[in-house]
Picture 1 (cartoon, rainbow, N blue to C red):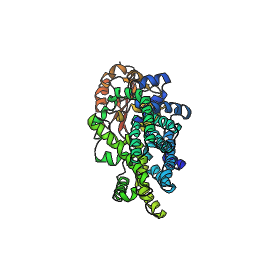
Picture 2 (picture 1 turned 60 degrees about the vertical axis):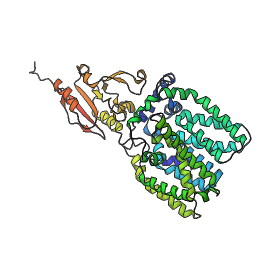
Picture 3 (picture 1 turned 180 degrees about the vertical axis):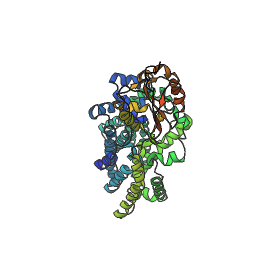
Picture 4 (picture 1 turned 30 degrees about the horizontal axis):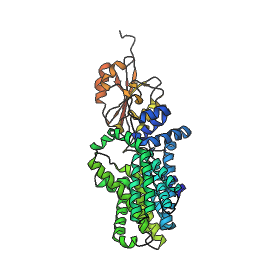
Length: 473
């Protein structure tokens, strides 16, 4: 099951262009260890563990789209394998296998499985931490509780919100009426987790401005609560899932009284508790919620669907239902793996490839570095530096490590005049479709615009000074 899930995610994972969040991963992984930890003290401490792992991974396997994303696919495989073991230990092998397959094909899983970010790893750790919890709660010895604490600490350092698993596990143990001894040992393990994660929590609170952009986004609504966390953009899979869960809820008392009762409680708590806590925190503290932050709850949703699909004694019916989910999610799966499948059409690879093939050695280039971070063409330079090795980056002033962000210090466009005094050819890349501002600045300097080239969401144009004829003074 682990191999199957990994292969589902790996398929065409090298096709989509990198996008800005993945560029952040690449830039962090390129730093020396000293530079990385110094930078994390200013920015993105929530991903401390992930950037550390990726630095090693990239050092071994390289920076291609396929190699950087393959770590997430491996994590999806590990999560699926752990999920089968977890569910089988409570609800039987049949439910476990169905849960593993459903997890592998849910749209959020197939998205995080080709994302060079921490979400797939945090989901994998969540599954194994939960499995270890169940083992520890059935045995009288301390070693398993030590493994449990280590697993939750690991998940939290990979992605801060994984600490919410503690709340999930506390509720599960209480609902299962575990003994006082079990609850005491869990409390000790949880305290160890909190103490171990205090440094990360303190630094992250100091960096809360890095998610201030959430206040400008419609991040809390029906779509972002009921669809995006587990189903990405697939409303059809979401509809199938929520109808299934509604039917399951109607029959809830009967299911809870059956062999699947423990599994149903675990799955429901896994899905609901982190969502509720994040929504409350978002309302009380400030913007903290975005759908992909709940990726580590997707295994719980897969368990809910598996319990529902296996209520029928007919195995054929179960797999027809699983097939319906797969078929409904196929359009989303294919779209995720298109050349511009990331972030609504990331075109960084298109920009880099065009410059690599069209620009001459020594040409100057200016890539827009303002506006929404996800739309800035300059991200292409960070994502694919080799394609820009033969051109001059006339905007560069200082590296991003000097800013405490993932953006270099660059020359503002209105100040570019003094930087083109000896430039005969300059490529300008801007977001959108218009080059009006560029024309207003460069044409009065004598440059002639060549035919612009449009990518998914940027425009590239070459500006040349006409050759001086022999008769010119």
